[in-house]
Length: 172
Image (tube, rainbow, N blue to C red; front, top):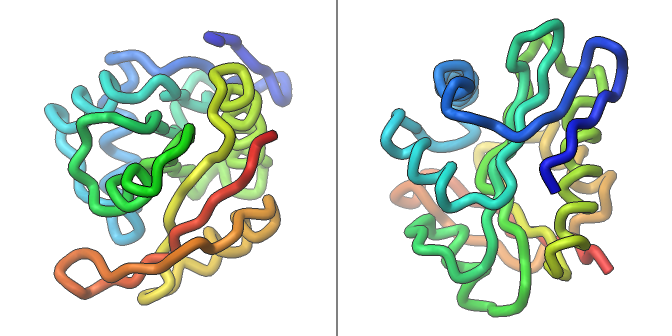
């Protein structure tokens, strides 16, 4: 399950390691308006909780990452908890971020295709995620709609300042 995937000669997907953390933290900070803040200690904890944590490399630089965890994890995210309370075997996409310089190159698709294979290999029958609908993250909505993710609920988070669409994709 620790496969190395090359999409193009210069684009590679591989497991994340602590040496990647500065780049991951930079990417997260650049896109924090669509995700939540992350410091090194929190990233270390997420890395430990996540059986799927991959980075995409372009010309030797980290240009994207995806963190996903299984059901039953000791994770307090209200969105994760919503899915965990529903039960079943799943992979929860905690965050996926692609640097602006790498968007439009198929990086997110490569990562999600690999995540789907991983889910099937580890017995997860669905991949779950949330995306902002108030305020809207239209690019994420188009991407997840294109993959066939279906809305299974909504909830207010961040002290009522955000509404998220809770979505799932069956992997079987």
